[in-house]
Structure formats: structure tokens, C-alpha cells
Length: 443
Image (tube, rainbow, N blue to C red; front, top):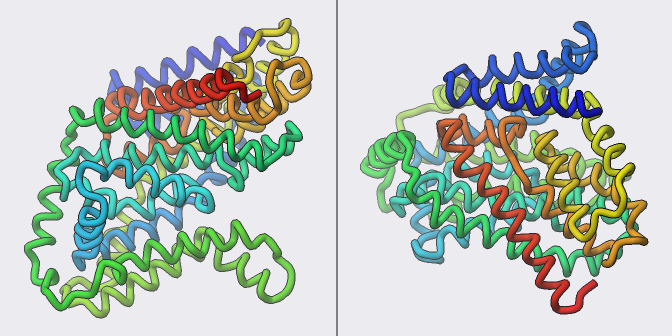
């Protein structure tokens, strides 16, 4: 067990050094790290390759098409000036100073029905346009959105992870929701404040690239006064989100209506419908670009994102298939009572080891669930502690880490100093929320 954990730490450190200090390409570094992990843990050569390919395929089968379609929507919104019109409307509604808070709240609402990666991809063009309009670094606006997206995905039912935790702990969902909303609010506040105060000094070359692109678009003839309202421009973004939300809340899959909802609410079909709306917008605009050109641009821009994200997914899958979480479960089950923070610590270790919030939530609930009766708090408070620990920390074995790296061309070293540390801040902020509730007598 200790040997396996030592291998994991050594390979993670080698991966971090390879992509940040030695400037190895992330795709090759992640692929080699995944192979090295499987071979070092005794999976065998053929099995290791099969696990790597399975993890790569599992990641790409739901993200590849969505990324391309989302990129096409983004290309249309940029080409027609829609992204800038949306950003103007958002700034009029909330103001520049409150923008990060508005992004965080938007993210927390959107990610209840929509998976984090998909939601960020769909909202990418607006995020970038808002960064340009407010002259804020893309990391400030993007990580504020990320804070909201992550909080709901980790803490708020009816997202699958928290629901699984409630089931495993036999917690009351209503009480768990009330506790986790408060805890999640503090976690999100910590993440947004971190993005506003700390990340504002991280202006990357991509910010200048965005500025040049958006200035060119805003000065083009397509910005004429007869253009439609921002609500029309928002449709390619809102419709997929609403369709995926419909699928999350209308769970019946029998009958014609149930099967139809199940079909149109799948991320690929929902975003495809959004892309169709974007195509109609393009036809109505006076831009000289045609749909085929923008589709090709979307494919070219998405290829690297897809490949690196797939490699990241493969690496994380090898770690999960290696049984590291089982080793940790055995380790903690052999220890005596560790006190108040046991669920938080176990969840943090699992997230750091596997790069998966879902694995961390379910794995920790399975490990500490049998100890619930001996804990000095309710299963609902235990669920909150598990959620807070699951924020800590995201790094090179997280697919979203590489999504940010490629979508905004953020150097790996900067992601460690911004996104990785933000996840730690959010975990500690959420833990502070649990401690406040405990001090107020909530058990």
C-alpha cells in the first residue's frame, strides 16, 4: 500500500516537473505518465495500454463532439459580434465591479443540471468577451465562473455526486441541501475573492490576443445598429443549458415524451441544437464568413484541446483503476478515531490522488459512512465536510485543468499558482462554513 502511494507521488511530481519546468508537451507527458503508472503498479503491459485507451475513449466520447460544437457556437458569436453584445448587456445589468460575483452565481446555477466542463465550454465566448470589455485578465473572469460551477457540482443536489453521498450516508436531502448551500456559498466566495484579488496580477499573452481579436470584430460592419438584441445572441447558449436542465429535472424516460426529453437533453444533442441556432444567426448576419469556414476553424482550434483533455482523462482513469482509493480506505479503516476532520482529509487525499470530484465524493462517503455513528455530528454535516475536502486540490490529473490550459492558453505553471491554489482556498473556505455552523450549534 505504501509502495503504491509512493509511486503515485513520484509520478505526479515527475509530471508536474515535465510540463512546467522541462516544457514537455502536455499530451506526451500525460500519456507517458499514464503508461508509467500502470506498469509501475503491476497492471501488465497489455492491460495498461487497454486501461489508457479506455480512459482516453471514455473522456473523448462525451467531450470531443461537445467541444467542437461549442467552439462553432463561439466562432459564430465572435464573427457576428454577438459575444460582445452579450458582454455589453451583462455589464449594464451588473456593472464591472460586480462582474466576478455575477459569473460565480451564473456558474452555480448552470452547473446544477450541466456538467462543469460542458458548461464552461458553452460559456467560453461570453467569458472571453467580458474579460475584454472590462479589461480584466481572463483568469479573473474564468476562475470566478469556475468557482460557481465547481461548488454546485460538488455540494448541491440534485447534481449526481452530492446525491450519491446523500444515498451512501443515508442523509436527509432537505437538511443536507440547507447546510451545503451555506457551506457552498462560503466556498464560492473564497474562490471568487481569490480570483479577484490574487489572479488580477496574472495577465497572460492570451489576454492580448483576445483584445486584438475582439477589437477587430467590434469595428467590423456587423456591429451595425440593426443587429438583434443580446437575448437573440444568447439563444445558442441558453437553449442547450435549458435542455440539459430539463433532462436533469424530468427524469422519467418512458413513453414518447420521456424518450424525447432523454434524447434532446443529452449534452451532444443539446449543444447540437444550440449550434443549429447559431447557424441560423450566421445566415441572418452580414458577415462574409460562411458556416463551413467556421466549422473548420472550430475543429482546428478544438483538436489540441480534445487530445490533451483525453490524455488527462486517461491518466486519471489509470489512477482510479489502480485501486489507490482502496489503499487509502484500508489505511484509514486501520486507524483509530481521527477526529472532526476525518471526512475532509480523506476527500482531499482522494481528489489530490485521482483528480475526480465524483470519485472523491463517492469514495469518501463509502470509507467514512460506517463511522457515522461515532462522529460528533450528523450525516448531513459529514456530507458537507466530504464536499469541502473534494475541492482540494485540482492539478495535472484533472481534465478541467487541461481544459483551462488549452482553451485560454494558460501556462501550466500559472495554472498551479491560480487554479490549483483556488481549489485549496475554496476547500478551506467551505470548511470554515462547516465550523461556523458547528459553533452555532448545528450538528
